[in-house]
Length: 598
Image 1 (cartoon, rainbow, N blue to C red):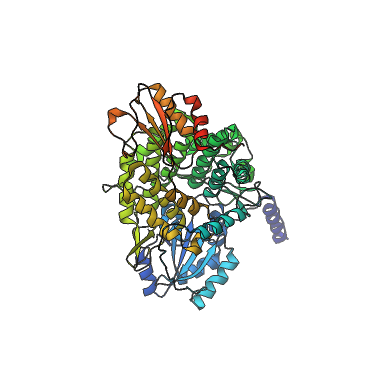
Image 2 (image 1 turned 90 degrees about the vertical axis):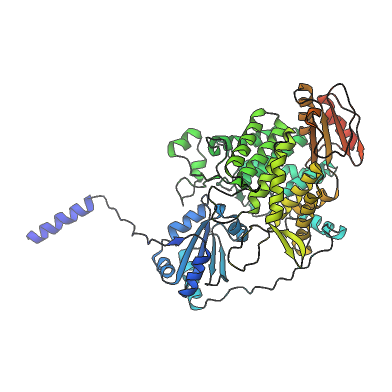
């Protein structure tokens, strides 16, 4: 009887106490950084290699950590048969560019020689991971045959008329009319696609211009209405945002909304650009004036944050702030600087310029190399990378464009010289594009060339040539174009970036020059009016005679008693303009082009 009573009271105590079931302890996986030494070890130990290429802001990366890599069977197989590599893709642009089509997260499997066996894009559930691991352990052969690459270097670095027409058709075909904007499943601003549409609208193609304006208007739905900043993308239309806020998205949106505002004068586009700037200053601005990298998609890693982002500012802050990646990278700061410079061009607000200049000064002080290049972060384990040098060179040129201050042009040219020297690719003795990293990921590996990077270097080289007249910069742009004009690559969607790059190498830009002392308020007003004019490809200079000749002296201007603005395009120059309020209308008349209406 006593035993029965004891059992009874034990049962009462058991069911009265709050129940708690602790999660089984997670296996500690031995993740290592990427290194050639680890592959050598894998080969020696007859093991395979797994690369978990993640992003610190990525929701599905967090879910994979919580579910897949915490699975006991996954952990057992990985521990017994694999060496493990984990890399934050923002920290390694070489790996990021190589596997961008597979993430994030991107999961890549190798043998010890570095041969790729399998690749998976996005979240891999535990049961599928177990099956894949067992298959690779049993039969470690590549899932896909690697086709032998045959590179045919085009004779000309420019698009043929027929190829350009094919690319234009593909550009138009990618527009999705039902929801608006380019792309179908994932909705976001591509950058060059919208830019080309807006440019065609300025030239009189109203249908094209309207497509660009619709994309900008729709995309406002994925700008955070509370904290500002644009989410990376939306799924199945514009109403299902993924909440990470990454640097490239902020850059594209700042540039495009500034451009859209310059065309239409529609205040909603200026508001959108300022909302992005406010996110940068509110959450990513460092105490010293540079910018951190990104904001996480999740408040609690691995937990979808839709309800959190529906809250107002007070409600969000009561729960916390998603983690900020506090790395300070040259590439990302270059993107932010370019975006802020574009905003300043249309806003005229000194605070926008100051933010850009402060970030540039910090990077020049803390990330510049003695040879004119830039490191990625404070301590680069690899590199140098094309992206850091290209984006900072373009950022410095952007600051020269919007200030006329030559202190920005000199380091821009040094960075251009560095990237031309360090990242140039030669095939069969001929210059052929630029590689992502100065060093190979593994010994003997072929260099990776990224299309978007080569588009951006072609456009940068063309602009820098226009400002300096230095032929080497034009040759750099042409070298990038030789890679880009390969027909198969050129017609791969999206095609707009290569179309824009080709045009900027084959047509002169809108050339505006303000002649007048930089201390004169009237000269500054003329310069600001020139900056605000809608031109995606321009050469704008401010000639103060006290500073000596302009970097490129190819036009002679008259000696006038007061500041004036001159417009030169297609081999002709305007009469001097003195009234900033009339600049826009007079340039329109000169070009015989009227801006599109929003």
